[in-house]
Amino acid sequence: MTMRGFSRQITAALRMFALLSLILGLIYPLVMTGVAWAAFRDQAAGSPVTDNGRIVGSALLGQENSGDEWFQSRPSASRYAGDVSGGSNLSPVGAPQREAVQQRRDALRHANPDAPADIPADALTASASGLDPDISVAYALWQAPRVARARHLNVESVRAVIADHTTRRSWGFLGTPRVNVLDLNLTLSHR
Image 1 (cartoon, one colour):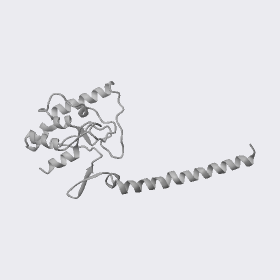
Image 2 (cartoon, rainbow, N blue to C red):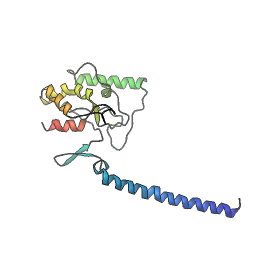
Image 3 (cartoon, one colour):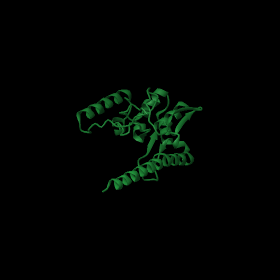
Image 4 (cartoon, one colour):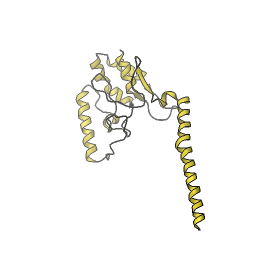
């Protein structure tokens, strides 16, 4: 290949690089952002949840709740920080994971002495993202005696609130029924 042929190829490659950078790095993201804001405004804004006109969280992100009167989210390896996401990457059969599960089991047993014997798995294991906003119905029901006692409510009325806030399977067959912790806690805070 001659120097002139090499120079033409380099020039063509640089032009293609500049064109694709413009299209894929600027135009495409701007168009997709515009479509998202036009068609899915709430999700594009982060699905904020408001209470009395004040943003209290996001329907898409779990958050830490302290106090016996609140339903607790799944454990989080990222400490519910919305700027980072990720699991602990601990082996399910390794000693550190077994110790973490045992510590969670002991803490939950101490905080929930009136709860059923079997603790649901999502109460003991951190989620893969560390930001799950939902818990299983079983975990919500498991926490009901503690929340009812702390709020001076009947356990059956707390279970009814859980039933009212249970999201069924998507399209009737995808996923499992779940409860959004923030939504559940907000409802209880207004009782």
